[in-house]
Image (cartoon, rainbow, N blue to C red; front, side):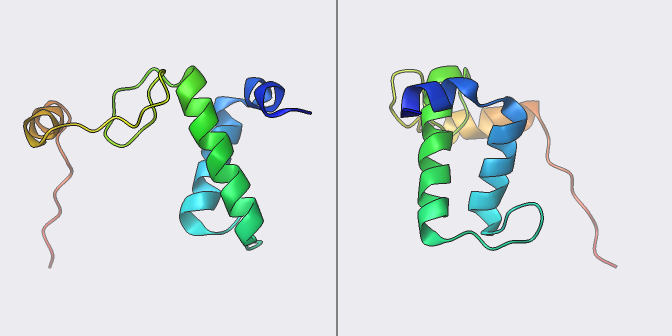
Length: 90
């Protein structure tokens, strides 16, 4: 299977699992990812985001394959629209 057909076959749920694996270094069942698995998963996520991700979030891959960098003002505006949850420590 070539990369293009593999990316086309990924579902959003599969991408979420791959992303979780890359972020935590473990698969959902607790198995540790090897360096090669982590690299391949990261490449698959980037390819999927470039093709299917119509998002404009900071540090994601746009449809043109370029990484989206938002300015500080854009990030502040984005956080005002979706406020963060604040917890008071006891």
